[in-house]
Image (spheres, helix red, strand yellow):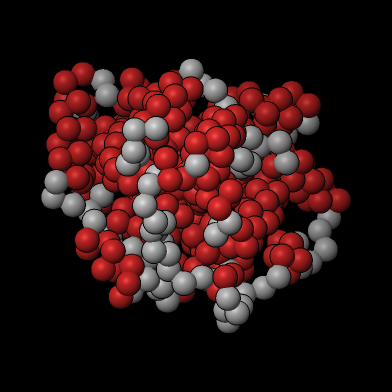
Amino acid sequence: MKRTEALAKSDARPSLAALLLRFLVIGAIGFGGGMANIALMERELIRKRGWLSSEEFLHGMGFGQLLGPFATNTAFFVGARLFGPLEGLLCVAAFLTPSVILVTLLSWLYFTFHSIPSLKSAVQGVGPVVIALILAAAWSLGRKAVRRMPAVPVAVLALVASLLRVNAVWVLAGAGAAGLALGRERLAGGKPEARPPSPSSGPPAPGAVSLPGVAASMAPAVAVSGSLLSMCWTFLKVGCVFFGGGFVLVPILHQRLVGQLHWLNGREFLDGLAISNLTPGPIAVLATFVGYHLHGVGGGILALAALYAPAMALMAVLSHGYARFKDLARFQDFLSGVSPAVAGLIVGAAALLAPAALRGLPGWGLMALALVLLVRFHTHPAIPLAVGALLGALRWV
């Protein structure tokens, strides 16, 4: 805790290159889905380097639950808070680059040889380590978000709602309402954590752009053919109703791409879903698989960009509004309810993922070992992830 506070004072704002490098690394090793990526972000950016306060990180996670993949949205929020919206988009690009490269390569192999590379065993081996990563993040963030008794039931109710699969948007709205009713002093107590300086709370930073500029930067710079435009329009519309996390996207895309447009058959869709799960990024990179099938490498990139565009636009607005209103008393009251709820949702995610990841005594043992290494000895996540992949490849886990 003291180390993080010291970092926040001495090295609160990184260079843009350092921030992009961190997101590139997180995007390369973040196997296990959105919550695993969140756990890595919390460790690498907040706990280890103190580039953003844990309170602001929790708020960014809360906003990220509203539309689209929340790990990608959180990456945008971090970049936008430290530099500006354009830099937020660069953080998203760095975070997604390893997954886009991998899913493009696997798509080429699949459509060329009609088979999926045998990587499933290794990926399954990292499952217990992913659970440990999520629990470690919940422990770190929960200690700061749940500091007073009134916050405990908020976190517990959010955990229960997560286990009952209640939409996270409604959970966070209810928690925010509780914050408004109880007030920040009763829920959080004390003064807000010191926040790193942000360009949005003062003069614009070099390279910062206006919100219309963000929208303009999302548009393709060249004219596209009718079929390519149709593909982008399809994914843009799906992105506008992409609520509730990555797996909510699956039935929407299946109905649209297989049942209505017939761009994929049922077998290809399932194989594309499997390939997306083999990458370290969000399951939404399924759009890259589809885009590659229709229009090659460029189509894969444009399909993913179109799918993410609505969420990125919303996060740009929310990040801008957060910078303007974060110091208002009633806004702080609302966010004081959101923070413990997010901690509860993280624990709920670990509980929901555990049955599939922890199969037998070896899986539980690996999870416990990884948790001790991460929490007690602050081991870099790449080490237990590599061990899990090796044990999985050997079929010991």
